[in-house]
Image (cartoon, rainbow, N blue to C red; front, top):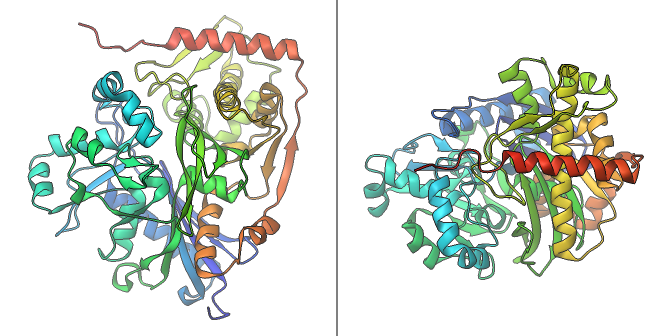
Length: 501
């Protein structure tokens, strides 16, 4: 590798925005550009993205980051891609045009179908994929598009349709339609991939009525997939990693050992534990997933998913209008000693781990005349933390490993008041890194390893750094009391929107 190639460009394609971050060989952020894109809510519980807008947004921030850093594309050794998982795009193989909007991981339109799968095939699906049947995953979304977009199934059967998660779409677009690929982490989130055989599963494809021909080739998370097309992108750079956002954060946090745990506070909240070379089947509503594919081998993880994390703060801003920014939410939450008995259960799109209730809906409970918007802001931050506690209780029980500490990352973890409450309610130290963009950093590390910028994982650990450690100060009595009330509030939110005869 020529010595002037000093940078890795990480493309972090999230649920509400696209980011491009340039890192140097010391994993220091050189430039970062972020841009939000349109969210579509055509019906209650439905969430969509325009896949073309999403790609153009990602390409624009990539080009802008290069300009901002005042470097030449030739100085970039590789691109690493990390992405929102489970979101699905179907596009025409010949024209390259999506046949419909992308269906986002949060979308609940296939909840009824997923419930039927859960009732009839849950054990088989969980055994093969590590997943509990839910509308969250890609399979029912692909099936819905094939069945509901005019002409889609016919095109698929003729071999004229391609499907993929967002990493697949980005690689296909960036390479000018030359490469149709995904990695093990993203494949493991589709509910169509056997995490033990590491193959698309014929029984699941038949059950879902999805032709295998539309699915991408599955490769390691850290390897060269292809080179960007100059006519499309304006530059030619190797794409050397694809990894789902949560697995990228796990890797970016240096959670390489069995038992290492991280929580990412993004649009949703996701806790992952590295379980090494052996998958652990959950008894507590967690998912078994692939942590990474590297050097022809995979590591597994246990995962807990909270659907509404930072998105709950956006709800306060965009739907309720009681704050103008996430920082204002922090300031208001810090202005009161507690939530004044208020509990928010943000089950706006159902509840994830460990409840898996697609029919739960959000509630704000415990309201009295003394409650003001500062208490609601604090209840919002506490709701995120309570959900993370739900996850860690399940994880410790499943893995039978004592979890001593939790590493945190993602945009919402910059909140000191929330991280302190998180440490208090978990009764464990919480480690926040200097670079909270560990999702992008994980993709950069994977790409850098693939092209030799970093020689091994030990070298990566040397460049990772902790910024702040939060330690618990809450009394055991208070912790037990408020968590008990949280559980009571969750029970009230369950089953609210269940279909009625």
